[in-house]
Amino acid sequence: MNDTPPPSFYGQSDPDERPTSAFGPAPGSHPAPPPAATEKRRGRGGFAAAVVTASLLLGGAAGLGGAAAYDAWYDEDAPASSNVATRTSPVVDQGEAPAEAGSVQEVASAVLPSVVKIDVLSSQGAGSGSGIILSDDGTILTNNHVVEGAGAGGSISVGFEDGTRADATVLGTDPLTDTAVIRADDVSGLTPATLGQSGNVAVGQQVVAIGSPFGLDATVTSGIVSALERPVNVGSDSEGNATTYPAIQTDAAINPGNSGGPLVDMTGSVVGINSSIRTASSSTQGGAGSIGLGFSIPIDEVMPIVDQMIAGETPTHARLGITVSDASVPADAQPGDPVQPTGETGARVGEVTDGSTAGEAGLESGDVITRVEDSPIESADDLVATVRSYRPGDEVTVTYTRDGEESTADLTLDSDAEGATS
Image (cartoon, rainbow, N blue to C red; front, side):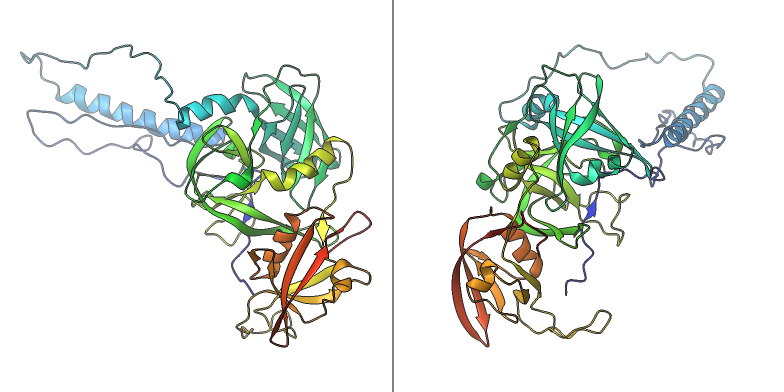
């Protein structure tokens, strides 16, 4: 069993989060007198950037304290007169830096008008995330975990690049893919994002992430695609179905509040929806920051579901009609027991639903699925994420082992439209 904690959601920022360091002396501190010298050192003060007002004020005070100490120090030591000429750096107006073709600057300029900050008020408190404009009249794509708190008497408001704001309502949500669509009220003339194809993304290519980490709207970060089809499990819905998707992994800095914002390629086309991060902490919620392991939902996989939500339909997903567990864990292992790995990889079949496509294809409890089409399956999450990348009705070839013998089965994927699925 994989004992690494799952990636954390980052749709809501933590109001108790504080910066870990500050620059500049604290208010009221007195630096030691400078050593005797003909050339005096220049003092440096500053303040730490922070998210909440209290921290900004603390940082500002530290900077002011440093400046005050600098002035007192040099007023006392300054000679009565000096014949040394004072020279200052020239100030020039260099003009606005032109954006180079294909640069991060050019991408940011093109995409920023299509990204919004989403603020949610609910009975649990306040949180914020990001969203991607899909239509000029206010259809916006985001994560389910960003807006789910607004379901019970909460409210949603959207902030646009030009500083205007609008209330918004939820058009549809899909916990299994962690996506949602909202509509901003009474808006027009917005700039829809350009949607790309995540199937064209390659490991190592440069990408840009845009969103509102820790509430800091219109933040741009860049990096590369670190991996593709990374199975990411971020929990389950109310019926126990896993929220798992085959993620694009990136080292572009992604933090709490980036949720729902776009991951774009260097043409400015959206290839993913930033959704989760891996942290060094065991916590699965909020406060920890980026360590270069961010995960985005591939846009190709979710657009059919997004179209269903926009049309007012209930999203549907492909399924095999089975329950699965990691083949590396003994089938009879009990929660809390020490586990001796089996040495196998794959997804072990548990229950097979009567009449399901897996049952009709001959799969049985105890079989270990090792491949779907050309995608290797190393765990239960691998299988769920891979099947979720297809649509109901798609035909696939499943490779599995039974009693050490490898077999294949051709089947047509079921739909969960008529009930819950595993």
